[in-house]
Image (tube, rainbow over all chains, first blue to last red; front, side, top):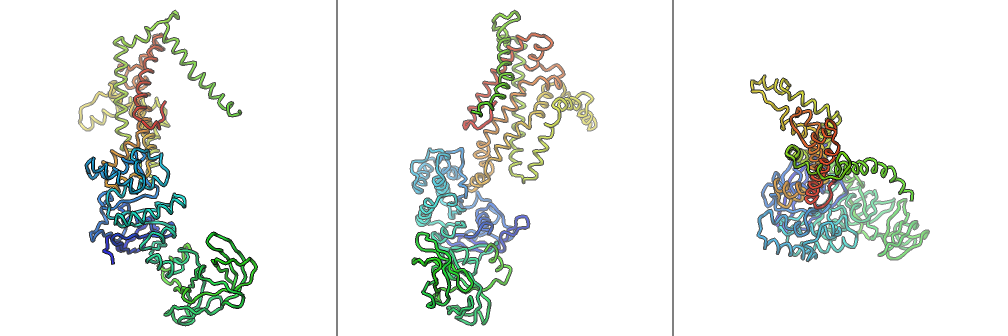
Length: 357
Length: 270
């Protein structure tokens, strides 16, 4: 277990009667890459701004290395931020931008010169010191913003959707670059995004948020393979979410069909949410699977075919590398371990799950 | 093709309002009453009375510009941090006097400042000695500041509103305190607005004759007053035009200096 570096305790934040964060608790470990993931308005950016010191929580405390920093202004925190819109200073050149924090902390000219050169090399922009900010592309500006934060050797780097404005190829390059930076520098990254792919690719820990609550926290594999509720299942990757009845341990009824599964402890005849990932559905010949149906839609999307199969009154999303023509009769099957059973939401906290689904 | 014709009204306006009048001023300025070429009207600026008037004009315009700047910049900073409703209200309050007649506003100050005026009545009630402000350069500066302050506030406010909040936050994030943010972010980034504001206060202050007439009681001679008199009472259009040309030269020089300050060239210059 890593040492805890930042702890948010019982954080509540309200903007004009709109509860953005509701009693949020979160721990961030040393040298951890943690991603706050969720749709817009879920409170992820507010959480980040509270850590950065740009918002003060209505209730609750922020701890940094065990010290309460709730009321400490941002300029005194050992935390630097990479902003969504880069926020470079337009009246300074690239070198002056990167040197800004170092000049304030009173470093010597020689130190600053070396550090700026080091920072630019780190983000693959060596020799850009005297360029004007407007002359750079979006990706280059983003990397300058990164260098400007990193040269101050913060303990924590906050990143607010830093790749949002970049095109796909550049974004993928930057993802690898961020992982490399994190490993080279050994600093903690708190990363905010609404892009589940970014979250799964880079993070040690993913925090899925919605409606001001944390829905689930865990490694990318946990989050993807064992979603705890319908919101997480729906938000992370594609999924088929159905109403089901848990007849007894290890047996669930979906679309009037019995499916053996591996979940226990839900009680008998309990209504549940059932999640089956599209790539886990097996397409067989009619009569050979559990549920017969008809292919009603088929698109080739590169890696696989994405089909919609109408079976048991539900349109199943199926991903398969073998194609079945529209109109074909098929039968669906699924391995017991690939069926995820989840409780229906009962409390207000759980009800937030239902929003935006 | 049709776009070309859209420019016609403007070209007519430009000819009638700018080119022809300027040519006439140039002609009158460089000739004497008989129409013969002379530089005397220009050189007349070196006569003590004219030179002093120009010097006083430059000094008072400079003082009022500085006062406007010192009032407007902090106000723009406060406005930047205020919420939307309050910001709109303060701007409205600032612009409100501009909707009132310019002469009326200036004459109101005359009533306030004159010997038995409101200002001195209040002082008397407080058992303070009366102050003679009316008919002094101070009264003229007061009038200039009052009349032209909105022209300083608005461009600086606009420039400052253009500064993205995240840029200010980024500066704090990198360890800057309030004064560093002001010195290294807000001030340099509002320079285009400051430059426009200076232009829009300095030029009318330099050329005004109405304010000095009303609040100077005919005792304060600015270059504008001299020129006005040459055109009206003295009926010496040649001298008036010559002095106008000199004043224009001073304005061009000061604008060029400002241009150098605003390296980005984003300001709106005359």
